[in-house]
Structures are given as structure tokens and as C-alpha cells.
Length: 221
Image 1 (cartoon, rainbow, N blue to C red):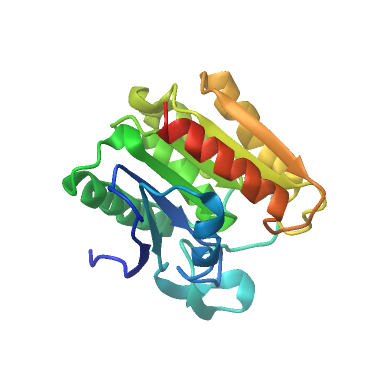
Image 2: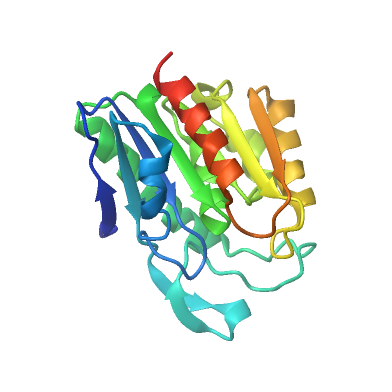
């Protein structure tokens, strides 16, 4: 498994924490790079990986940056997301987490974040990771392979804080799917925060300001 290329924004001050942030379908690691100054986390290293390129079935098989293949637009179809590519990308995320740990950052100072498809993968990988993370930030996303959660969830992350943010007018990932992911994690015992915003499938300034507060609270405990 070859390592992913990444966009990295180094901290202004001593490196004491890290955010690994996964972009959405068809985007790149540069997608959220511009928001880093707004978040005012001077001791935090931000790592934005580029997803591997693969054919995406719902886009007529076009090759594009994707964390996994999506086979149908039907949210009710249990075969909608391709498990093999999900598992492969989960391995990439684990590699990124391990690299940050090897740099001297304890796992409880690492946040795993993502938007849309990247948020779904961040939640999937984070709850299964065997070392306790600082938190997970799940933006405009949903739960992958929900049926396997009960047997695969790691005890280490059953109490990890999870931030959920979603646009109430999202016509790409319906807000009810974000709420379903939230409810699953609340039922599992995770301390969760839900934030709904008057927006579509995007991130707005209000959400970024709440993310700033949330990250600073986590890293400055």
C-alpha cells in the first residue's frame, strides 16, 4: 500500500496536536487548506491527504479522487458503497494516524476529520481505531457499513467526542443521514455535538467558527 500524498500546514508554534482532514468526492487535499488561519490553532499541524483516484460508478465510471466507489444513488441500497475500497482507504487513514504518532504526537491529541465522503470515512476509521483519539469531526456525512459497527468498534474510542455538522438543506447527503449517524454514536456512548446550519452541501462561516471553538476546547483541556 503506497502512502497518500498530502497537503500539510505546519503550526506557527510548537507542534502539540494534529488534525487529519479528509476531503469530499472529486476534491483534493487543497480543498480545506484555506480555512486553517480562521481556526486559530497555532500549535496544530493540519494534514490534508489527497484521495486515491478510482472509477466512480455513479459518475459513469469516471476516474476521480475518491475514498471509495459509490455504486448507486439509492440511499436504501445496502450495496451502495463498495466495501473493498472503503477498507483500503481505511488503511490509508490508519497509516496517516500512525505517522503523526511517530512524530511524537500522542493519539489523544489527534483529531480525525472529514467532509462528505471524507467525513463518512473519518467516522468509519475513527470508531474502529484501537487507540483513543482526541476527537472526530464529521461534516455533512453519514455512517458507512453500519451493520459491522457493533462487532468492529474499538473500546478505545467509545468515549471519544464527535462533532457533527450538517446543512439542513443538503440535497446531496440528506440531513437525516447525518442525524442517523449521530444517533448511532450517541447510542454507543460517545459524547456528541450536533450542529445544523441553514446551508446546502457545504461548510459556512458559522460552522467554521464553531469548529474553531471546538478544536481549541479539545486541544487546550
